[in-house]
Length: 153
Image (cartoon, rainbow, N blue to C red; front, side, top):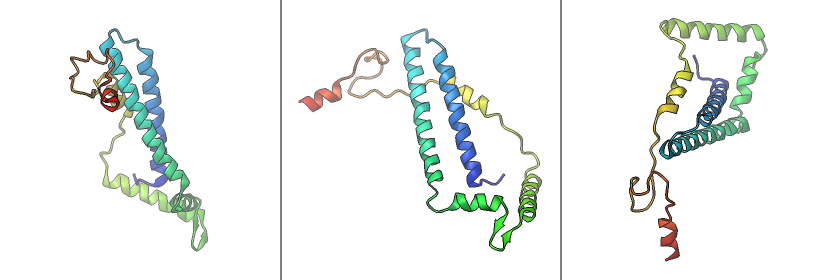
């Protein structure tokens, strides 16, 4: 449907909750090897970074510097320039929803949980610093002090 500011806000909150559940589900599984443990840590870190960026966007929306959110909430309540008319606001919104479904009759509901469950199975890209590659560092088994050594020199 239309991507109103309130719908974007709701979707962002939903994404944050799904990522939180995904992190909990990932941390409930004990990794059998060090390599799997490293992948799990990086998956959790990537999910936390996504949560942080999403919440930063939510904070910007809630600050409402351009009053778009306030105007949208007022429009939902039926407040227009001519006054308060709840029924016209309701029927305008109903008309908008019907038009959307008329244009997209084959629109289906997508279960976002399936997409998030696939994130548990993927192997994250792990970048190590320094001149060694991932095999020499044994997937994080050794501490890479290359950058700190260069600062010391």
